[in-house]
Length: 392
Image 1 (cartoon, helix red, strand yellow):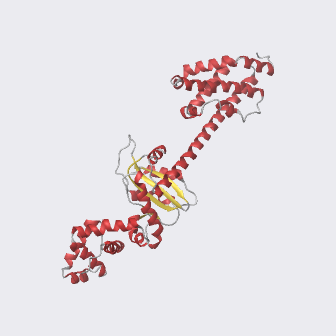
Image 2: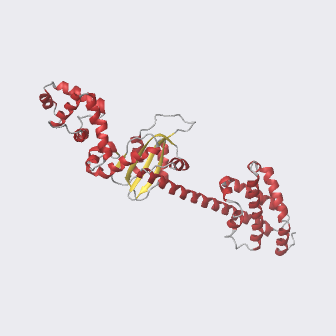
Image 3: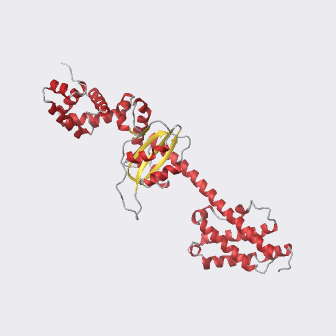
């Protein structure tokens, strides 16, 4: 065979192409366990890829300038499901076995043929990497569109039966409570870095860009089995870790909700807080949406009004009317203990005790300047909601 011309070599390769394909399938079965464990339909698809590779080698040897069709000719014979069931590493193993079989069969060939086989194996390896890269890119674009759809559904509150399956399709690892973080969109949104930072604090995120708003749905992720489970980070701590990835401006964290399918409630509060955050001159970053309850209520947010009534006004009224009266007097008198004590005809220590009880009942401290605004707004909104007493 060493004295054959190129035309004779081509004819020889075409004559033994069937033998090469058979020998390749046999060696695949002997050397690759994953190939032996495949169902018959998948094995047949892999065999088609091997046969196409041998045919493409012969055509490429005839005209080495026709490189662009390599990927289409070889991998076009495989069904799309094969890309999902055979990894890139396994595909490279398939190429290596095929090339080895061809080299063994033509070992007595001239040097030009051996060099052609080496060059072809390089080109086909790059072609395989390109096919898998394109598939990964298409899958990434689909995941990005699906994630945007999920975040849009959460923000709009349009819950349907498909939302849990869509979230699961994105590989959501969060469990338990969820919060929504809303801020301004930076010039470049580094989605991968946001996800890596979230993983460092044992959290999982869904990310959506809504124009000039960047929305991140945060859930706590289960730690790995081989790692100790430390105290989980709080949602404000997670939001603080993600803060550098938002643009300049206000950053608002919605309240905790029981599950990701209820994230729309947290999103509504976060969006309402983000819309009015500029009215709080010294608002921290991030800001809790519940710390913006007065501004949200003044802007007409019904969730803020009901929160003020149900978490502050009603608990105080139902617990003890003295607490409600003391809070009114304390706030009306400019947070002065002495003035409040004179109005109520009690000792200032009694006022202090009642203020402490108020803090224990509702969780807000009336002696703080910002919390006093929240409590006063709650008293006003709560008194407005009371039914008017019938006139005689």
